[in-house]
Length: 229
Ligand code: APR
Image (cartoon, rainbow, N blue to C red):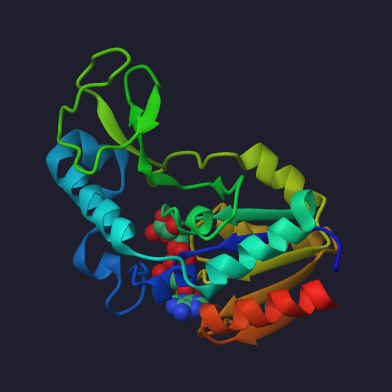
Protein backbone atom coordinates (compact mmCIF):
# COMPACT_ATOMS: atom_id res chain seq x y z
CA UNK A 1 0.00 0.00 0.00
CA UNK A 2 1.36 3.42 -0.85
CA UNK A 3 0.35 4.92 2.52
CA UNK A 4 -2.48 7.41 2.81
CA UNK A 5 -4.21 8.32 -0.46
CA UNK A 6 -6.50 11.23 -1.28
CA UNK A 7 -8.44 10.95 -4.53
CA UNK A 8 -10.01 14.15 -5.93
CA UNK A 9 -12.53 13.21 -8.60
CA UNK A 10 -14.40 15.27 -11.19
CA UNK A 11 -17.01 14.77 -13.87
CA UNK A 12 -14.74 12.40 -15.83
CA UNK A 13 -15.27 9.76 -13.14
CA UNK A 14 -19.00 9.61 -13.97
CA UNK A 15 -18.76 10.25 -17.73
CA UNK A 16 -18.90 6.52 -18.58
CA UNK A 17 -21.99 6.25 -16.41
CA UNK A 18 -23.66 8.56 -18.92
CA UNK A 19 -23.46 11.80 -16.93
CA UNK A 20 -22.32 14.82 -18.93
CA UNK A 21 -19.10 16.55 -18.02
CA UNK A 22 -18.98 20.35 -17.95
CA UNK A 23 -16.34 21.44 -20.43
CA UNK A 24 -16.38 18.84 -23.20
CA UNK A 25 -17.78 19.96 -26.54
CA UNK A 26 -21.13 18.43 -25.57
CA UNK A 27 -20.68 19.48 -21.94
CA UNK A 28 -23.24 21.06 -19.67
CA UNK A 29 -21.69 24.49 -20.02
CA UNK A 30 -22.24 24.28 -23.78
CA UNK A 31 -25.99 24.26 -23.24
CA UNK A 32 -26.33 26.39 -20.13
CA UNK A 33 -24.55 29.52 -18.93
CA UNK A 34 -23.03 29.14 -15.47
CA UNK A 35 -24.37 32.57 -14.57
CA UNK A 36 -27.91 31.41 -15.38
CA UNK A 37 -28.01 28.18 -13.35
CA UNK A 38 -25.05 27.88 -10.98
CA UNK A 39 -24.73 31.10 -8.96
CA UNK A 40 -26.70 32.53 -6.00
CA UNK A 41 -27.59 35.50 -8.21
CA UNK A 42 -29.10 33.13 -10.80
CA UNK A 43 -31.24 31.52 -8.08
CA UNK A 44 -32.43 34.91 -6.85
CA UNK A 45 -33.19 36.04 -10.41
CA UNK A 46 -34.87 32.92 -11.81
CA UNK A 47 -35.33 30.17 -9.20
CA UNK A 48 -37.58 28.17 -11.52
CA UNK A 49 -34.81 27.87 -14.14
CA UNK A 50 -32.24 26.85 -11.53
CA UNK A 51 -34.58 24.29 -9.95
CA UNK A 52 -35.34 22.92 -13.44
CA UNK A 53 -31.60 22.57 -14.20
CA UNK A 54 -31.02 20.55 -11.03
CA UNK A 55 -34.24 18.55 -11.50
CA UNK A 56 -32.72 17.46 -14.83
CA UNK A 57 -29.38 16.62 -13.20
CA UNK A 58 -31.22 14.65 -10.46
CA UNK A 59 -33.19 12.69 -13.08
CA UNK A 60 -29.98 11.90 -15.01
CA UNK A 61 -28.28 10.67 -11.82
CA UNK A 62 -31.28 8.50 -10.90
CA UNK A 63 -30.99 6.48 -14.13
CA UNK A 64 -27.17 6.33 -14.14
CA UNK A 65 -25.29 3.35 -12.73
CA UNK A 66 -21.92 3.27 -10.99
CA UNK A 67 -19.15 2.28 -13.41
CA UNK A 68 -16.09 0.08 -12.65
CA UNK A 69 -14.13 3.16 -11.56
CA UNK A 70 -16.64 3.98 -8.80
CA UNK A 71 -16.61 0.35 -7.69
CA UNK A 72 -12.80 0.15 -7.72
CA UNK A 73 -12.50 3.25 -5.53
CA UNK A 74 -14.95 1.65 -3.10
CA UNK A 75 -12.80 -1.51 -3.04
CA UNK A 76 -9.70 0.58 -2.32
CA UNK A 77 -11.50 2.30 0.54
CA UNK A 78 -12.88 -0.98 1.92
CA UNK A 79 -9.37 -2.46 1.94
CA UNK A 80 -7.69 0.55 3.54
CA UNK A 81 -10.44 2.40 5.33
CA UNK A 82 -9.30 5.58 7.02
CA UNK A 83 -6.11 5.92 4.95
CA UNK A 84 -8.16 6.48 1.76
CA UNK A 85 -10.06 9.75 1.41
CA UNK A 86 -12.51 10.17 -1.47
CA UNK A 87 -13.09 13.84 -2.27
CA UNK A 88 -15.35 14.63 -5.19
CA UNK A 89 -16.48 17.71 -7.07
CA UNK A 90 -19.34 15.58 -8.43
CA UNK A 91 -22.87 16.03 -7.12
CA UNK A 92 -23.98 12.51 -8.06
CA UNK A 93 -24.19 9.57 -5.60
CA UNK A 94 -22.49 7.00 -7.82
CA UNK A 95 -19.51 6.53 -5.49
CA UNK A 96 -21.91 5.69 -2.63
CA UNK A 97 -23.97 3.42 -4.88
CA UNK A 98 -20.71 1.77 -5.92
CA UNK A 99 -19.98 0.94 -2.26
CA UNK A 100 -17.97 3.95 -1.06
CA UNK A 101 -18.78 5.78 2.18
CA UNK A 102 -17.85 9.04 3.88
CA UNK A 103 -17.33 10.73 0.50
CA UNK A 104 -16.48 14.44 0.78
CA UNK A 105 -18.86 16.13 -1.70
CA UNK A 106 -17.13 19.51 -1.77
CA UNK A 107 -19.61 20.92 -4.33
CA UNK A 108 -22.69 19.46 -2.63
CA UNK A 109 -25.09 16.71 -3.65
CA UNK A 110 -27.99 16.83 -6.10
CA UNK A 111 -30.02 14.42 -3.92
CA UNK A 112 -29.88 16.81 -0.98
CA UNK A 113 -32.04 19.93 -0.46
CA UNK A 114 -31.09 22.93 1.67
CA UNK A 115 -33.26 25.64 3.19
CA UNK A 116 -31.80 29.05 2.33
CA UNK A 117 -33.66 30.47 5.33
CA UNK A 118 -32.86 28.11 8.23
CA UNK A 119 -30.07 25.87 6.88
CA UNK A 120 -32.10 22.66 7.31
CA UNK A 121 -31.08 19.80 4.96
CA UNK A 122 -33.26 16.92 3.82
CA UNK A 123 -33.34 14.39 0.97
CA UNK A 124 -34.34 16.30 -2.16
CA UNK A 125 -37.62 15.33 -3.84
CA UNK A 126 -37.28 14.20 -7.47
CA UNK A 127 -38.69 17.54 -8.59
CA UNK A 128 -38.23 20.77 -6.65
CA UNK A 129 -40.12 23.91 -7.70
CA UNK A 130 -39.38 27.55 -7.07
CA UNK A 131 -40.73 28.51 -3.63
CA UNK A 132 -40.61 24.91 -2.41
CA UNK A 133 -41.36 25.02 1.34
CA UNK A 134 -38.77 23.95 3.91
CA UNK A 135 -40.13 21.01 5.97
CA UNK A 136 -38.49 22.46 9.11
CA UNK A 137 -39.28 26.19 9.08
CA UNK A 138 -41.92 26.33 6.36
CA UNK A 139 -40.20 29.17 4.47
CA UNK A 140 -40.57 28.97 0.66
CA UNK A 141 -36.75 28.88 0.52
CA UNK A 142 -35.74 25.36 -0.51
CA UNK A 143 -32.74 25.28 -2.86
CA UNK A 144 -30.54 22.54 -4.30
CA UNK A 145 -27.81 21.64 -1.77
CA UNK A 146 -25.16 22.56 -4.35
CA UNK A 147 -22.13 24.85 -3.88
CA UNK A 148 -22.55 27.48 -6.57
CA UNK A 149 -19.83 29.66 -8.03
CA UNK A 150 -18.95 32.30 -5.48
CA UNK A 151 -19.91 30.07 -2.52
CA UNK A 152 -17.52 28.29 -0.16
CA UNK A 153 -17.08 24.58 -0.94
CA UNK A 154 -18.02 22.15 1.83
CA UNK A 155 -15.66 20.21 4.16
CA UNK A 156 -12.59 22.28 3.25
CA UNK A 157 -10.99 21.98 6.73
CA UNK A 158 -11.31 18.20 6.75
CA UNK A 159 -10.15 17.95 3.14
CA UNK A 160 -7.09 20.11 3.86
CA UNK A 161 -6.21 17.99 6.91
CA UNK A 162 -6.62 14.77 4.92
CA UNK A 163 -4.49 16.14 2.07
CA UNK A 164 -1.70 17.17 4.46
CA UNK A 165 -1.66 13.63 5.88
CA UNK A 166 -1.54 11.96 2.46
CA UNK A 167 1.35 10.19 0.78
CA UNK A 168 -0.31 10.22 -2.66
CA UNK A 169 -2.71 12.74 -4.26
CA UNK A 170 -4.69 11.49 -7.25
CA UNK A 171 -6.59 13.89 -9.56
CA UNK A 172 -9.14 11.71 -11.35
CA UNK A 173 -11.30 12.88 -14.26
CA UNK A 174 -11.07 16.57 -13.53
CA UNK A 175 -9.97 19.44 -15.76
CA UNK A 176 -8.39 21.16 -12.75
CA UNK A 177 -9.94 24.48 -13.73
CA UNK A 178 -12.10 25.36 -10.71
CA UNK A 179 -10.58 26.49 -7.41
CA UNK A 180 -10.08 25.56 -4.62
CA UNK A 181 -10.03 21.97 -5.95
CA UNK A 182 -7.69 23.03 -8.74
CA UNK A 183 -5.15 24.13 -6.14
CA UNK A 184 -4.87 20.75 -4.41
CA UNK A 185 -2.14 19.48 -6.77
CA UNK A 186 0.16 22.44 -6.08
CA UNK A 187 -0.57 22.15 -2.35
CA UNK A 188 0.36 18.46 -2.45
CA UNK A 189 3.57 19.17 -4.34
CA UNK A 190 4.53 21.94 -1.91
CA UNK A 191 4.08 19.39 0.88
CA UNK A 192 6.28 16.87 -0.93
CA UNK A 193 3.32 14.57 -1.59
CA UNK A 194 3.49 12.43 -4.74
CA UNK A 195 0.85 13.35 -7.34
CA UNK A 196 -0.82 11.31 -10.04
CA UNK A 197 -3.33 12.24 -12.74
CA UNK A 198 -5.84 9.81 -14.23
CA UNK A 199 -7.61 11.39 -17.19
CA UNK A 200 -8.93 10.57 -20.65
CA UNK A 201 -6.85 13.45 -22.02
CA UNK A 202 -4.18 13.99 -19.40
CA UNK A 203 -2.79 17.47 -18.88
CA UNK A 204 0.62 15.73 -18.58
CA UNK A 205 3.75 17.28 -17.10
CA UNK A 206 2.18 18.84 -14.02
CA UNK A 207 1.93 15.52 -12.14
CA UNK A 208 4.61 13.07 -10.97
CA UNK A 209 2.75 10.28 -12.71
CA UNK A 210 0.10 10.35 -15.46
CA UNK A 211 -2.20 7.51 -16.50
CA UNK A 212 -4.15 8.40 -19.60
CA UNK A 213 -7.33 6.58 -20.53
CA UNK A 214 -10.98 6.11 -19.57
CA UNK A 215 -11.58 5.95 -15.82
CA UNK A 216 -13.53 2.70 -15.99
CA UNK A 217 -10.43 0.97 -17.40
CA UNK A 218 -7.55 2.85 -15.76
CA UNK A 219 -8.92 3.10 -12.21
CA UNK A 220 -9.57 -0.63 -11.68
CA UNK A 221 -6.08 -1.38 -13.04
CA UNK A 222 -4.50 1.15 -10.68
CA UNK A 223 -6.51 -0.03 -7.66
CA UNK A 224 -5.52 -3.65 -8.35
CA UNK A 225 -1.86 -2.61 -8.40
CA UNK A 226 -2.26 -0.74 -5.11
CA UNK A 227 -4.10 -3.63 -3.43
CA UNK A 228 -1.68 -6.28 -4.72
CA UNK A 229 1.41 -4.07 -4.39
N1 APR B 1 -12.29 9.03 -17.95
C1 APR B 1 -11.42 9.88 -17.36
N2 APR B 1 -11.44 11.23 -17.53
C2 APR B 1 -12.41 11.73 -18.32
C3 APR B 1 -13.37 10.92 -18.97
C4 APR B 1 -13.28 9.51 -18.75
N3 APR B 1 -14.14 8.65 -19.32
N4 APR B 1 -14.19 11.72 -19.71
C5 APR B 1 -13.77 12.99 -19.51
N5 APR B 1 -12.70 13.00 -18.69
C6 APR B 1 -11.97 14.16 -18.19
C7 APR B 1 -11.81 15.28 -19.19
O1 APR B 1 -10.62 15.11 -19.94
C8 APR B 1 -11.70 16.51 -18.25
O2 APR B 1 -10.35 16.70 -17.85
O3 APR B 1 -12.76 14.70 -17.14
C9 APR B 1 -12.53 16.10 -17.04
C10 APR B 1 -13.86 16.81 -16.96
O4 APR B 1 -13.60 18.18 -16.78
P1 APR B 1 -14.82 19.18 -16.48
O5 APR B 1 -15.91 18.93 -17.47
O6 APR B 1 -14.22 20.54 -16.36
O7 APR B 1 -15.37 18.71 -15.06
P2 APR B 1 -14.75 18.98 -13.63
O8 APR B 1 -13.27 19.03 -13.67
O9 APR B 1 -15.40 18.02 -12.70
O10 APR B 1 -15.32 20.46 -13.29
C11 APR B 1 -15.03 20.95 -11.99
O11 APR B 1 -16.46 22.83 -12.44
O12 APR B 1 -18.38 23.64 -13.34
C12 APR B 1 -17.79 23.28 -12.17
O13 APR B 1 -18.89 22.59 -10.22
C13 APR B 1 -18.52 22.16 -11.50
O14 APR B 1 -17.61 20.37 -10.18
C14 APR B 1 -17.50 21.04 -11.42
C15 APR B 1 -16.18 21.78 -11.52
